[in-house]
Image 1 (tube, rainbow over the protein chains, first blue to last red):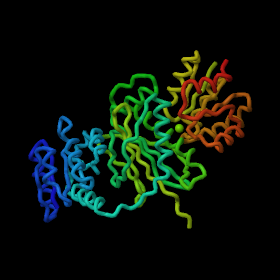
Image 2: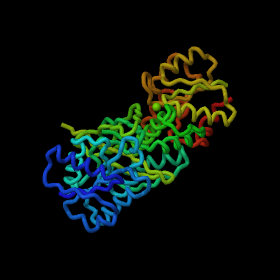
Image 3: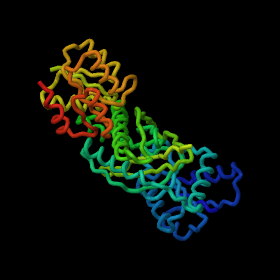
Length: 284
Length: 120
Ligand SMILES: [Mg+2]
């Protein structure tokens, strides 16, 4: 396996190499990338690209784009401090398959790389996404009615880990004929902006209790709208009380064995994510 | 007239009260669930309109509505404002004595239109 590492500082390359050495993973070649163009020559079908999310401009995203241009199947992972969690959306949108938290935990990095490789080599398991459109429509409807904002659907992918893409997430547990969860995860700035628009009062730029409450009400409305659209299908569910979790790089678990679908959206040019993990309850 | 807004989301309570303000209704009291709502009605017997959410902790909006009808009869208008948008929910609420039903998300216009007939 070849790991191509893009980082503004050479210490990252050593850090990654040390992790794999300490975990006794063999047959890995490490190459430091200086520019996105190098990927064209260096990448082969056993390559993983790791992008350190420390560039102060768009260089990180350019590395992701270059890798995906070379071969769509090349897994790309982003290395990001928890403080930067809310900024990794552009990398995900460009095609990155996951985020590894910094400071690096050796287990986490090696496992993430293995999972990324596995997901691209495995035959794609077909995933039933017939229930996703009501959630997408509900999201559009809630944003346009409550905030006067048009949201654009960008990308849809599966995500197995529990790391949230945003700084604040609203979660609704779903139970009934089908069960699972739906989460909206937003960068801080967008969360403040939409709750400000909803209220018509300036809430500033910090994740205050008021902003968090607004995020809870957003997921409440998205879940409720989707619920009504799914009535009389095997994906119907009941909702309860939303909860809100914030903090850089926070994690929210989902039901194991049920595909967790991520829909990336953009509102006013800022990305955010909706995650839906839902499956009919098996009847005995 | 005095209006009671019951919703577990402070954001939603503020959205509703802000909209009421734009139509000249400033006399508002608020509660975060049905239990608090009942207490509010006890201490504010002059409340003339209740706007209540459905999904709330402790006592949900439907139980709150039923309790109002049990203890206060039919005279106090109660309007549900909820994200529960299914026909079955609307029917249940109306049968239990709700005077009107507003589905979230809503525009200020819809809110005004549905609440309007109950304002004094
Ligand atoms: Mg509620």
